[in-house]
Length: 314
Length: 326
Image (tube, rainbow over all chains, first blue to last red; front, side, top):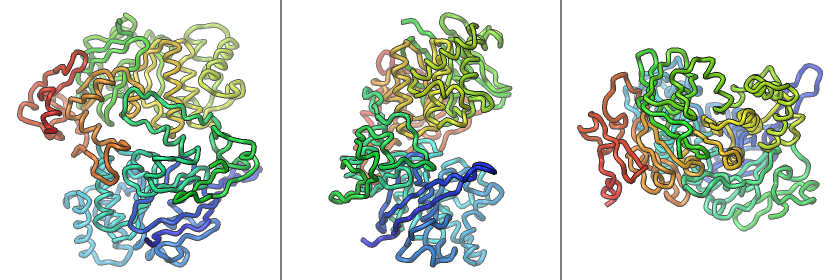
């Protein structure tokens, strides 16, 4: 399988101003990530808030320039593409359909905007918008509505229609169902799955919800404080998590099974701060199996069979 | 066991346009967790606010029974209610940042609760605050007391909220989506803490959530709400072993559960979305989304029992899920 996206040692550092006279904080949001996303699959990126997963999504979409490293989409560097070219290849779906759609534009204008930006004529835009709305399960007469007249699930369908209207090869979904109710979440997940199969899309699926990722993704990368700490097939990762952080994440999934109680995830209350990355292994202040070596030595990614783990003890 | 909080026939409407709660009955016993579960707009939060007398302007509450520790809450004045809130009846909300005052330190906010309800010196109140912060798993409580809310992470703020709720030894804790804004690992820590505190202090907890996973792990009793009504109520074991209302069944099918649905296979889903219920609506609020709806669903819906203590509001016989599976 060829790679749809090739991420090569990418870093993104934000300067955060902390006032007139103090030194700016350097937030290392993504800190040396290398990943290869195979074409035609669904690739999951999971982690807690602040781990850099959304920043990585924005880097892949070309919405932020990288601080260092390179990203190849469909074999070509993002740097070598202009905006229009990029838009035909890769498109986003964001978390909150309440803020990602322009409230003053009709659905037709919202879904048609990527086409207009490519210089396509009004008539063809109408035809393609209508076809796309139907494809995502919305009636054609929705085209004249405003986002405020739609429910959350309908809005997310509009966001998906907008992402697909140019026929991209890759769609990056950043928490696409987190703002939705469970019954609506299931509708959207079913739709994404169906579209992926029918259109041969590559999906990058970013989420903090591990049950959803387990359901929809073939491969999963776990991020912690800007780095990928474990990367494996979904089955392998969920059956035998190897990194202690992955284990804690999986332990904290609360499945609807009564009588099991709430597990002890054993992470303590030292919360990670991407502006102040701990020395050695960056997970060591929270790690339940930390050793002295972890405090001084930063682990490098290691291949164990088909999985990659970044832990000195693995 | 007598109920600490007993609510029956609770109704809430807003300005004669919408009825958000349409006859809800809930009992919470000492040392027990009762979960109200449902999707957004089902009336679960409004029910809790109505119990506490915290409805927004224009909200009108009526109830057949509304009693807390044997005291009828219906006739209480606002000042009597506010003496109860934060004292014997404490609450925590979803977003701790909006429920903490950004202009005051953690210590002064926590101490104020104690001094206002119980009197005593500020010094004593601060000592108690420090002890409680330690109890909820915050290291260096002395330092935290002097900090402002924005200096704490989301998980720490929620721990502070819990400690603050405990300042006056409450009997009942009402928690409205207390972990929804938190990361999964922190969520597990906070929920575990609530369970420990319940065992230790005999707290009664009314937990409001949309997450069936939390319900399964935390609840003794569950009430599933839809469109302002409790559509099914049972112990957690009974509910998950034999969900009987079509809505509960639909909701459970929507949750991707590892090992239950094959990867990429279609999840069950409920068509449409939560409707707005106009004043004077009759029949089942779920009928427009229900596969089993018939003409009977437009009339008054009977409450049936599957087994004693497991009630559901639907015209179908309790054996329908098995018959449907065949």
